[in-house]
Image 1 (spheres, rainbow, N blue to C red):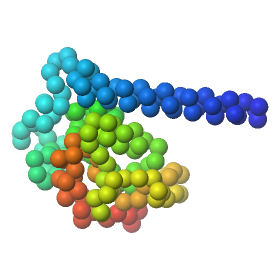
Image 2 (cartoon, rainbow, N blue to C red):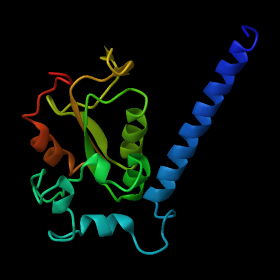
Image 3 (cartoon, helix red, strand yellow):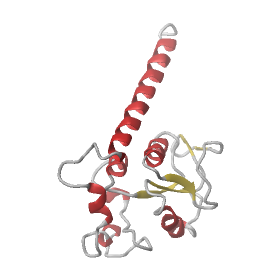
Length: 172
């Protein structure tokens, strides 16, 4: 078994590099309008959503959870994984409370390739992975605090404003 460990690590690294390249290439094609062109532009449809089109109902009970011109949607109310929804423009951005370091980098990469960014809510600085903490309950590493991530930089200030008063502690 020990003989196969270096080979498995090399294969894992190769798969990770190939997946990162494919994700970057797909996001670049999407940005240039060469992907998901059939049936209209999903980004324009999502941005053009008016009150009464279902956005305000997504928070449950008709309550609006976001301020400004952005409609809030709970994670469980989205039709699938966050990654293709952000890449296609269906979702312009998201707020993450102490995201794990395994999935979140993909979302951050999609946002940055499309011209957006991921910023810490508490200070508005770009997210880095210099500070992490071990979540013993979930058995994973996480970034501390709340992060606003969007493929459009103009959405980020609204997301930051929404989460500014939220507690940065995961478990209270």
